[in-house]
Image (tube, rainbow, N blue to C red):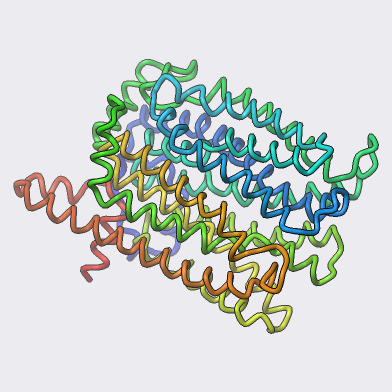
Length: 491
């Protein structure tokens, strides 16, 4: 594994080089080739898979403001109910999906199989004739997409560590806002060019286009997705590649999958990791819920359908840059400093929304600055992979639990804090915006707490080792972000 470079005092050019340094020259040739193969397989499939997932997840909102609402006479909280159906299934199947993902034999085939199935359900959404059928489709799509996000983080943490992990997690995560952004352009194009084609409105064509994207991605996954190092070997990895990958795990002290038993729940609940990281993700979900609903404000302001679908894409473009650059910088500088910068932007934007009566130009700025949240999730999950690398089953359980409890708030929080209609309804959210502001701050506090608690664990570990082991551990790249954070806090 790579050693963290001391870029803090380097020139700007040196920083740029480190940002794009994916295959360090001090790596052996065989290791650089292995990383390149993994990037071509894991990242390409994971990025495409994540892209179509968020393409579909956003399409329901874009369809709602592009004719679905009027066609089905949806003048209540039906948009929230669509999301509730999706997230109920997403929550229920999260932990079972993650525990299946931790099994080497299943890890290689699970995501491609689920993607085939949710592609079928995506096509089905284009043919619904009642709101109840759409509720059922959203439930099925949520069930089948449940392990994708957390499962991909688990897979990344099973092959990469240190700066490698943070840089790739940030690159992968850009497909979240990219899928959301492309959905807006697709809906605008479908509304303009496909409305009435085949006797169908443009919003139905959006689901058809999404389904057309989804199936080929699943087929690619069956060919190239490698699962975990102990999964059945894909055709493009040699026996030597697998042996090197396992050696890399041993060097980084990343524990490979072991026996899955009930004791994983006992040991996980007795450690601080699950409690702090689940709290952080709950805060992220509640605080970030209203950020992506700029389209509802544009609709209220009387913008055209095309503008409603295209103007919010600026937020997602900022989200893409923040996701990639912020997470990459977190592999170079202390991650808590990146969190502080992003949180400052979110607190400013939420404060503008609480004030509400502000110039329209400032409100556009506030909506767009919500895109700075793009780096928060990949940094958080990469930190989980780094801190809990010594227990594969605990890592899978924590990531699944974060998603389960985090997204469980999507089931009821929108109905109470972010209703679609009513005096406190969208997009004013007189109650919702102040609550979002509080949870942005709590997320930052929770993340800093995790850094401090890990620092405490490292100190305790060092006290139990001899001086030679101390020097080896402190100079390794296994905990790049958190060790640098420790140094910063000491200063």
